[in-house]
Image 1 (cartoon, rainbow, N blue to C red):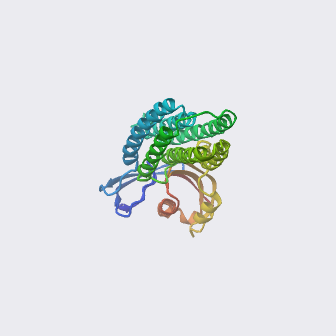
Image 2: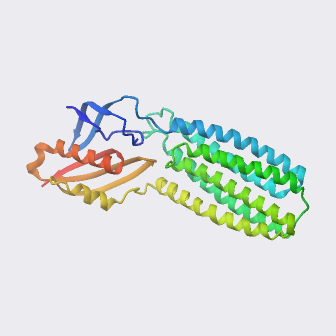
Length: 329
């Protein structure tokens, strides 16, 4: 049997590429007590590739640039006696940590997993995003604390040195952001690293504006206002990341189950779809199990029904791995 773009026994994320041509040249099906699971052998002609290789390279570049800038801000902060610059360096350290976690996660996810890890190490990416989200929240708390501290204890700083390094830090954050945007924009793990970069950039902007205002007015309370604005903006992004990664770790369905049920039940050969479970291993890697009730008269073509269901699920919902148990009446 020759089936193109078929097969829901895949242990890798769904890749959308109009130039890819995956064909199943041999199809094997096992039926154990009406519990049907499809197996396919596919040939990829090289036009489709996983984003992870590109993401890993971009993260390495971003990590090196960020780490060097962090060291520069630490040194300049102590020389200029700028607590704000030192705080920005510490914030950039959390950014470096986020990039490192993201890089490690992608490396782990690409490793060949032992038999006990039946879905590989892909979930490591989601775990890393969750950790990144927590570090972002902690950095928000630190920003608020530091803003209050600077308001209550203003100090004399070398504005020129601090301003120059703060501007350099902002430029580096922009460059890092542009680098990360070249990767997979929908990857929750890369997104979390991008949010860290955004928080650094906003922090740098706030510090630069604060330096300018303080230089001309000595209004130190401006710092705390800017810090609160930065914390609110970053906090929204952090909550989105934590919500997304937590839902995945809790095996919540990334798709509306009722919508999937109604979609499959539109098939004229399907009487009912029930006992449905849908979960996400990592981005674009959805799994599904369910019981499919068909008419007893349709038993002779249940393979065709299975093929139709699987094809529709992969094309519409990116579900790459299914296990169905057939029932009839």
